[in-house]
Length: 292
Image (cartoon, rainbow, N blue to C red; front, top):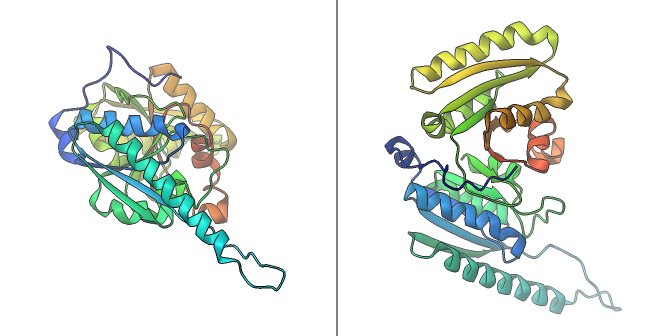
């Protein structure tokens, strides 16, 4: 799905959206494959008149390199550190070029990318992630969006690989009656209030259908008191089809955004959270807003 929207693009500047999102954080990498993510962050910051904070962070992977006598050769580590510094410098140049005249700030740090972005999120309202291929993520140079959701305590907007401008005029909310889904619902409320259509979607086994119907209706009722144009939708399907069905519903209503709780625990324990979150983030067809 092409996420770039032309004349139909929603003006993401209603007062309640602007007031909720005043600072946007994005991890900037030197590689061309990361540029779509940066352009997405710049476009969103410009639309919301928000400050954009770019973070260049890399670190050297701890390695043991020994010479014939068994002594560590520090020159290798020094060379790798210099490469990281040059890469951060290229990322800074890309950031300033893309940011243009919008309010912006830069942080360049030789440290773990995910840990650094999570720490700097203390003053941010939203993190923009993704936008680069997820086939080979190096934790010493890149940020895994699921890790960011776990570490930062902030909503993470994951862009498709091709980037694009977020319209968010129609939104699908992946609903499961749990803490993570409730957190995502609250974090996405500014976008939900600005949308023309919101579907609260539960995908469950047949034995859970009645409970899913009740909980999705409750969510819709609560959102309507916030003047959100929402409706429930419950579908019986196996767990391994949840991501597929969410994307199908999004395509059916013309939604370029799926909201979901980042279910599970650390990716080290569940291999990128497992289940729904893994499926949505593996190769996102559209924007995904996750919270944990």
